[in-house]
Image (cartoon, rainbow, N blue to C red):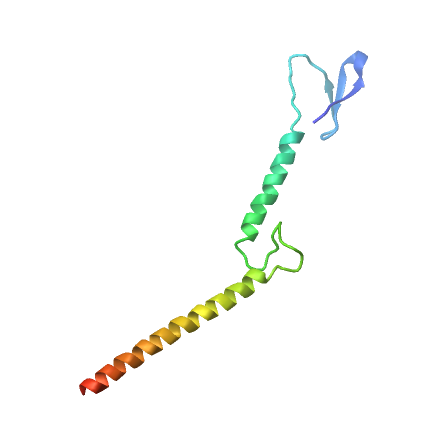
Length: 107
């Protein structure tokens, strides 16, 4: 944050952000927050990207354009594959149990 010296001989300064005109005093030290605000803006973008990574239809910072639904489709295909594998495993185990029980004469 920079101050504009309106009248150096009268020690008047103007804050351009608030349009506040005041007397320049030697006992007040003021630091520029611009570099810190730039870093905070960058961290804010990273935090938004982290939140967007939790939703399958949101774009990510480092992703190519048009790939917003890639993780959504990958989840559908992956879960379908594992569902079929588990379903076939349970059906196979059920068939084995039914065959063993039928050979023992229980059914």
